[in-house]
Image 1 (cartoon, rainbow, N blue to C red):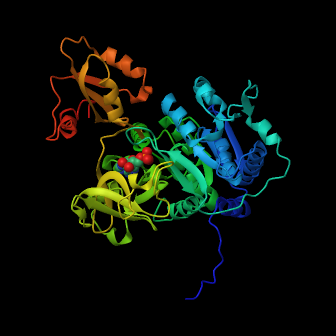
Image 2 (cartoon, helix red, strand yellow):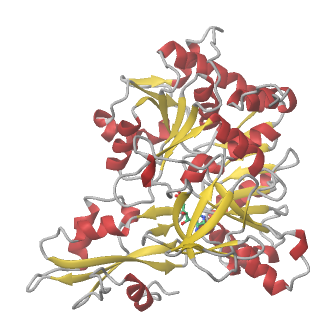
Image 3 (cartoon, rainbow, N blue to C red):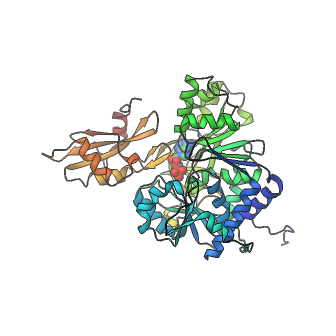
Length: 538
Ligand code: AMP
């Protein structure tokens, strides 16, 4: 046995930072401010400089390797400083989804044992009511809209940075150490934490940027619309920084008109988000094709299925959809639906069908499907649970043991049902659990059902996903009243409104005599979905 002669280089955040600083220091980073007419502009060099200052300031606060720092921020330069500054300090970047219900935010922060939080000043109205319940040592406020007058116990981000005096201590780098974490909201019960290693993030940044994947380089100007609190904005802040793409962040301004203005003024070439965003944009550019002078863009669509009509529609305007699939548990990129060169001779219709599939696994990722009898063939017809392996796929959840997430032979069970064709293209056909995905975010039907069924007037309730033009899917509740109960839609709405975020609430309540059941006594949701599929006007 001989040994390799290669250097033992650790794949850690420092590699991304050093490369970016040396090669792309002058590249611009643009952020839209809370006032949408205002922009913040600086360079990669400025960003990295401030990230190091943040790292040192966190060290002065006493951060130790592996300590979690939560962020509750929009997509902008301040969040980017946290993306790099927290890991450079040795800490773990824990991005928190600000759209979750207050109770879930409290649970996540405390479960992750975040020592510090960095939050946008504009989000203080959301944070203040929770403050007492958050077990953190300090809440650091980023002056996104320029707020400087802060009441105790909040800490000013800029004042914190002022405590640094050039004594940054490089942590001991270890590529398998944690860099970041993110909680899923995709399952019944409590959200679960996924912890990303340095190695996972570096490899993901490289592979996701490949031409056959998301195709990002220094020739591009990239706008992640997908929130930086949703699986690291699909890793784009890391890949853009590593590869020198110009970065353009939309802040909280996510309406189609605001995004179109941004694309036009910054000459954006790549943008990424959930289908709901692109459906809104397509509607406007279809109606007013001459209003915006847009560059030809590549639009990365993921988080939910990209309908074929959307891909065709954006093509008509000269944009190219890159359809991708992934999960919080896969950091997130798993598959990408680009057309392999060997398939380019197929008919136009066939190519559109292919592009509306979720696509082939990117390099270093393995996929397979499993039915009740075992592993299924790649024939485009056999349907089973999608399982995945790879260097950026989780093998467990934070504070849980491995058996929950993995098959007996070590593959991650996605909970998605799929086919894989002979060319390696995955098509997601269903979800094993009947979750509802609204505007790119999950809503748990079971949680809503359980709450509804705790109302004294409700006998039974099933909540299903119903297709919705704007949001992809919206919940609909099918309810059986208890005998003699005087129950109205408004009562149930108020009842759920006390327990869930507003966007979780069903858009409609249908009162029925009984709910169909499967042989094993479970709600037959497939039948319900079929009955109510046109309820929201599709
Ligand atoms: P999340 O962890 O919140 O990103 O949600 C991951 C889930 O979103 C996956 O398990 C899929 O069910 C769904 N998903 C993501 N991308 C796609 C896609 N392109 N098509 C269909 N479903 C998708």
